[in-house]
Image (cartoon, rainbow, N blue to C red; front, top):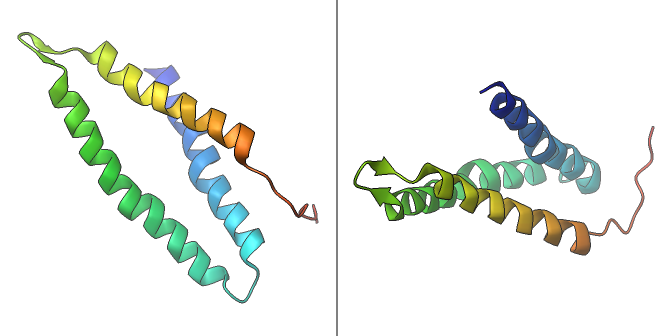
Length: 101
């Protein structure tokens, strides 16, 4: 349980907080507010709507006579996350280096 809580905190920081910081730095002062609003809509709005819908479908697909096959249910999003991490690692480029100060 504690490992799950720790992992959730790390994932939250790296996905949501880092995404907002990066967007803030890349957008510039002119469109900073609009960019933050767009990323919030994409992650907390549309992203969660799609995520909850897919999660429900996955959970219902692995219903058993005794309940659910939770190991398989949790392996699917873990696999999706791994593929996304690989895509991000190989295809994300930051053409302009950000100043550290």
